[in-house]
Amino acid sequence: MRAEPGPLSDEEVHDALSMRCAYVRDEVVLIDWFAALLVGDDMEDERLVLELKIAELLELRALDEQLDRGIDAAYAVLTRKRNWIASLSTRAADLSLVPPL
Image 1 (cartoon, one colour):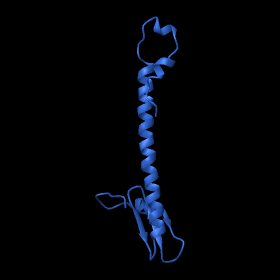
Image 2: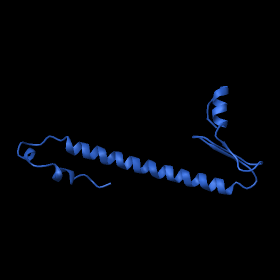
Image 3: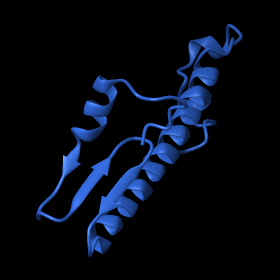
Image 4: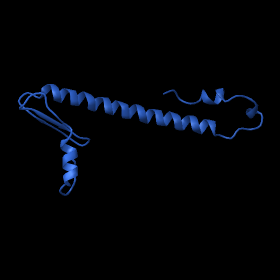
């Protein structure tokens, strides 16, 4: 589950197996950053929850990238050199040029 090219240390194996989750005796779910292992007769609900969480993580990643672009654009506007007449006014007009998130 860790996608390492060689064998894992005992500590790494213990860490990977410590996230074990089971509600009934004959089922087990192991989840790690790289993979998930679902073992049992009817694991459809667990699979759907994992799919939902992956979709949420992808959405948060996209929002984070959008926020980073907005911050970079605002920083570029706010650090731009202005002439002495423009420096007498506020930066509100400059910030209106930043595209909305």
